[in-house]
Amino acid sequence: MSDWPLWEVFVRAKGGLSHRHVGSVHAPDREMALNHARDTYTRRLEGVSLWVVKSSDIVASDPDQSGPTFEPAADKVYRHPTFYEIPDEVKHI
Image 1 (cartoon, rainbow, N blue to C red):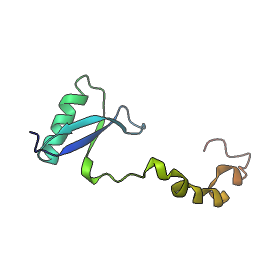
Image 2 (cartoon, one colour):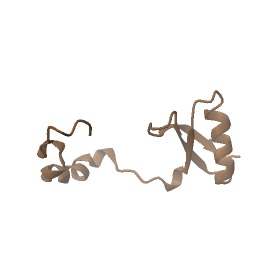
Image 3 (cartoon, rainbow, N blue to C red):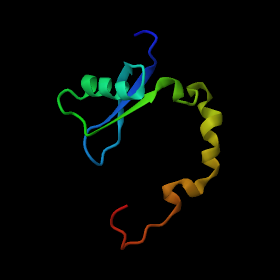
Image 4 (cartoon, rainbow, N blue to C red):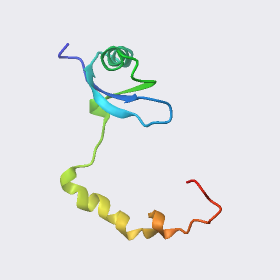
């Protein structure tokens, strides 16, 4: 089992909610990873959807590099919601 790859498990609790990371499982392939994830993380019918992703396939930014990674966004004020005026007739966004 130690030779099996590690898979990250994400569960969506209800329709309309986002998936959230709940843990990891070891499995030889994606079908077994999905089955292990179901058996491990949804025993009490907590979820309506599961995602399993090989840990080795996840790419993440380095928290130590957050400045260079996210500072360019500060130069693009048009991306900020405060840049736009919302018409009075728009009630829900």
